[in-house]
Image (tube, rainbow, N blue to C red; front, side, top):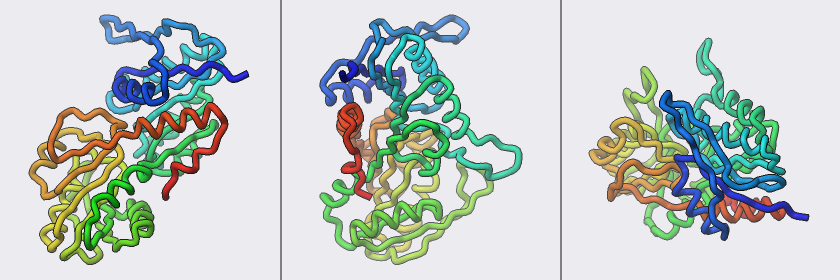
Length: 310
């Protein structure tokens, strides 16, 4: 007998979850957050989840309250006797802390994986982790989806002549190369130097840029400094246009101002993180239908590999 499926949402992903549940074909479950004057909060399921397979939708963007909300949602579901608890994290926060890149620092991504497991998660569903190996931090199955499923058809519809894929830094070269192979395009790799986090000192590129329509590929756009400097450099070196495609639109600090002043033609992102502002330079492609389809496949124990273009 298949258990009943219920979908609940945390505070930061409410719109995403509403669109997802509509695509799945059922309303969101009733969940409330009671906040106290000292800032503490408590989760409460206002309907039974006993014996149900439940999907808890929450991107763990800053502040950390969003992460803690998800942990409390998991714990409350476990204590309410849910049969299976699936944490749906369209954006997995702290993913950039996936290793010790200097002495005496935490590996935040591993800590988050441990917290979720201890809270009672049975499965994780996420998109475009900063590093694929983060899946190995979990002791439960991870459904790792890729925005390339919607990004590649979008690029193909643009029908850009002299298409060139680009990586904004050396770390993104594998991703850009995969896109370039699939689209049979040229590739450009950027090299950047920085003295501290979020501040790029200089950037240069390796590859042909003159007369090319370039698409920069990355998993996250945070302050926008790297992408915008890369786009400006490419335009200065004769590129016809520069677009950027980033799965997760963190866009912190002065990112919107930096983007508006840059020579980027268009920034294409997904809706894993809600935008703080609307701007003509940003186009949002929804991944809620993809997640809804994967929900169906997971519940029915079907393969999800058809969603992996790259």
